[in-house]
Length: 491
Image (cartoon, rainbow, N blue to C red; front, side):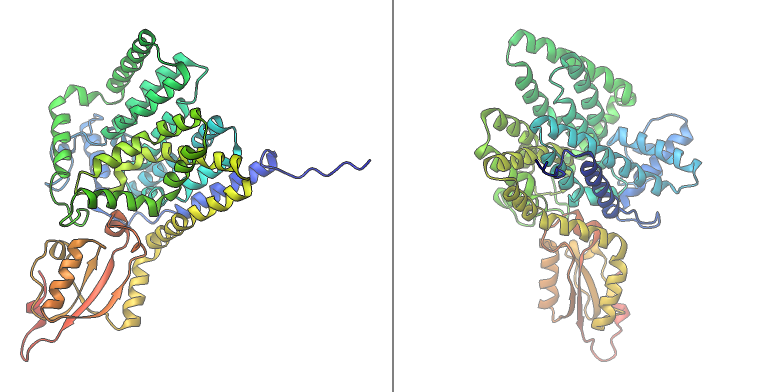
């Protein structure tokens, strides 16, 4: 009798090794770091300046007021406390290897995001028992445009991804109750220490607890007390100066809240209403991360009661943030960073449910379709990081618009008067403020000579256009005889 040859499946160790190798290779390719001389936003200097201040004082006190920062940053605050301390540690460690501070901080991002992969895979494996869903989840994260963008910037989002992945994994430790309670408190303290809004992941803890332990009042109060006590103790250990200087902590939170109370171009929606704010938020994620919304929705439609409860638990924080920021005219997609990993896990559950209800090949086709646009955007991020200046220069040479004076972004976004005449170009952030400036220029007799489209034109206005690559509009208007264009140029 002939024994049929075994076909390697996803449980085959060699297949798994090949998948992990490919995943890490793609991860590193998309997140290939630029040189330390490349700066995407002035925010990136903050951890470097705060690190210098901590080194000078000899204390790990990351108060921004002690750092050599511009006045609009230099005030009492502990925003991103634990990230500032971690960045300082990365900078000091990097110096031993001769690395530039900016490069050291970005390597910290890579290490944090790399740590997300096994935690996310392990979480989905525990939730579904499916390696197929686990590998799908890490592929979604690897190609997530926001994660690729965050990896190259000296900002705290990459540490937030790691903290939320840790909270996810802890939430699946159903057989170790006391360990789970303690770790919930510790990880939540770390996340809140990185960014205060990490506290919005509390529904994940509540839902996971109810799934694992049920609802018994006395037991619930006791266990909640353990989590809260550990959280307070861990917070004091991890972020002591926030407790020692509460006035600094509260002052920073007050400034942070005011940031979202007014206009913040190009991140504000011009002449918007609640419906416009909600659509701006929702449409961004429908384009940049459709998997987390559509696959989760499919899971809710076809899953069991237990699976649906898990998906609701995993999506709760994302939904809360979506509702909250739909009441604000300012949109920063990075405000959702800590809620994206639970949402990816929810989408992976939905994919597993689809593969069970239909077939794995059919679910794989749906998965590939949902990944097309985000993966293309992730490649666009990588291309923009390394080639945006060269691409713009080639465009200008090809269209014959070299030498056009650049109008500063603050001038076009603040709707300052268009110069009387001459040849200029201004950045188009795909926002309402840029459109107003364009209309004003046309109204005053300018003609559009060329238009460079951002790689991210399909997205609503976000940090992708503001930090990575904006569009450029080249305009000209003949000057009267004897007029001097230099005199008409913007300051």
